[in-house]
Length: 410
Image (cartoon, rainbow, N blue to C red; front, side, top):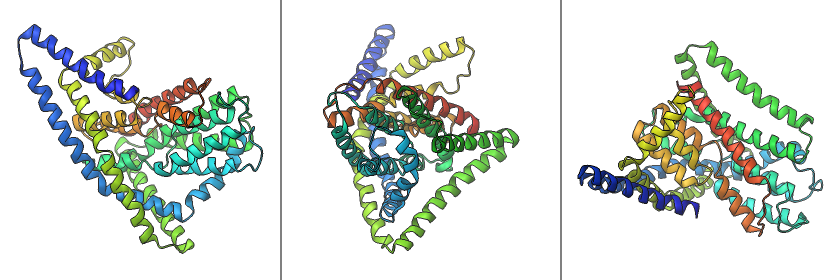
């Protein structure tokens, strides 16, 4: 329903501003601009989905190879010492741990089609352990906070959109997204753990936090010690190298498991085609509404308001145009995706704003959708502090995304 209200509001506000423009100037051309923008954006939405097909086929094929060759299960096994401490109320060796491991591993690999049914199954199993069937348990809150924070190792769809938008190096946002999504997840873990009085000073969690912060410190050190051009070249090269090494690991695992990687890849690639077709109406709907909103001048008025406020407190305003994507992300994944695409169309895929919107898009999941879907699937109406803590994690991720974009691309 939130997306419905946003969709309608974009049109109503755009037409209202156009009518005010007509009354003040007597110029009817504003309505021609609104119609032209709607037709152009409808065409853009279809073309974007068409160009996405090949990239989605490639990555969903590779990710299916990873799934069938045991990479997902291996990640689940590696994460077990951490997750058993994050869910202390679940009996040790309970079968629900397998579902939690699989869901989070699938999310990390960008396997959304696999992650959602696994998540729903996990919620059903957690509900069986829940003493109050109308209220989210501590384990449910931790599980949903991890899902909403959206830790992703491979931002498949974002790289695909950047390819279609003509980015010079579509994978150059890999490291910024990894840093931002990691911070969002760490903040979610820390907030929920402190609220639930979970001991975060145990060895596995300390090792996790230390590893992440050491990685960030190393990247920041390199950014300050190397010339800008050298650091940018290094970060882009590392992003591409890491992705290629991940693909190599998938292939080696397939060989070890003696699976037919070609056939498995083709099966996964078929999902890429159906996914590309499925997103066409959603993408067209959001791009048309955003295009009309922008053509009316409403977007400019909104950005001027934010720019005035940021200027007033003395901060740099280069990131202001990414605010719509930042605000939309917790509300609607397709809405934020549409704003990201619109930003790349307007400012360029390799522009500061284009890269920032891509980084924001990859930082976290759609908080309200995840919470509503998973809690609704087991009939829970009271989520306690889950929403507020998840939004704080989203905020931390957005701030980190802004910082990382300045760090890598300014």
